[in-house]
Amino acid sequence: MLANVTSGALIGIDAYPVEVEVDIAQGLPQFSTVGLPEGAVKESKDRVKSAIKNSGYDFPARRITINLAPADIKKDGAAFDLPIAIGLLCATGLIEAKALDDFVLMGELSLDGRVKPVRGILPVAVAAKTWGKRGLILPRENADEGAIANGPAVYPVRDLGEVVALLNGEISIEPFVSRQTLNLDQTLIPGEDFTEVRGQESVKRALEVAASGAHNILMNGPPGSGKTMLARRLPTILPELAFEEALDTTKIHSVFGLLSHHNALVKKRPFRNPHHTISDAGLIGGGSYPRPGEVSLAHNGVLFLDELPEFKKNVLEMLRQPLEDGQVNISRAALSLTYPADFMMVAAMNPCPCGFLGDPQHHCTCTPPMIQRYRSRLSGPLLDRIDLHVDVPRVPHKDLTDPEPAESSAQIRERVNRARKIQSNRLAAYGLHANSQMQSRHIQKFCKLDSAGEKLLEQVTDRLGLSARSYTRILKLARTIADLAGSERIETLHLAEAIQYRSLDRKT
Image 1 (cartoon, helix red, strand yellow):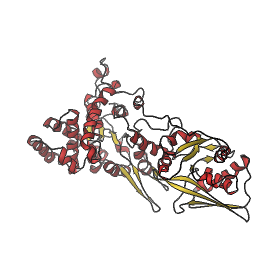
Image 2: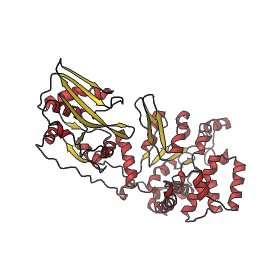
Image 3: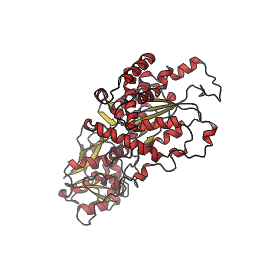
Image 4: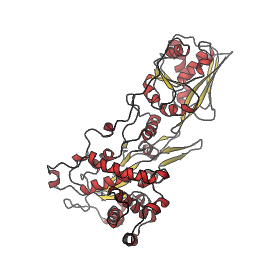
């Protein structure tokens, strides 16, 4: 007696079909699972056995073999519980084999037969569009997540008995329709707005430039100057998520198991703030069976690294590839994976170990060798990949007590949206949407300078000894500043402002 059930599994953030083949043969009672099952899959036999018995069905006391094909890829997670149980019931004649041809089944089983939610439903729902199936049978808690993909119909189920009745035509379940939509009002974090930030007008301007061109930014200033407060409000001035961006971001959160059952679509740009003790696998991704890291969870959003020099140096150096390519490649002996990691990096640091170098209100107790060792934790290649280096001075008392309201996030975001629209129109033919993504051929075409600008940039490059990467970063910044001003040409004024955002190059 043989049965075949279709399920799904993940490689990175992409899904592939898994054929759950169930064979029941004569012989001593035995339950074996083949096809490179990991720990949770091996343990499914005990959950499946109890779920079938407690749902009122007979468990066959024979030789049972479960094959998960393709058999050369490791299978992980508890999502195979439901297809294995249904395959067993089909092999014993309780379910018609033809009834399984049109469905993809996923779900974890509790011992009493209830179907519990699993992670990674959205990538499976997106990929199932090409598998030739007309329906997904999923746990009720995962129904919204499966339905937003606009793929095969989603049939939410509560327990094993309900699945059997549905497949046998004894009951009818209406396909679930997702009500999740992108709502612009939800892109702002309640209570966080730039109106709350007193003073720091130059830093606000730098953040506006960074948001307009999707540039990376490093803020350097003493403790209490507002670096973290400013960083947390950056997502409130970024353009709203497009549906395709929201779907890509949601896929990553689904794989990681971070989606709420009540809100199956990520509607606002992620803001990830890992602690400086994070490991390289936690930041970049990896592990024995690779999973996304913080850089991927920040995809289409912001990665905030507070106290940047306190991160381990080998961890920081791993940021080079995602900052340059917008993705992470993880290679293991068994497989190689690519995770998306197109994020804005916002970093904050103190100017010295004690934090008060250059602060007129406090005396710095650090010696020059201490300061040099502290700054040497950040390598030149990493700093080259950060477009803006901005000094954040202490806020004077008169600014803190100023009753005049500051500019709101909505007002700043309006200018950012205009600049992004200009860039999108200019770069759409190349598949780009922001100035930070431009390569050398785009820079040569869209970042031309007049003679005065060429002379100024030549003097700065020679005096500061800028690398070629820093040179191109300045040109990209100048292009973004010109877009904010609505100018087709990069003027000397725009170039001068871009040059001043390389403060760490000047100090070096």
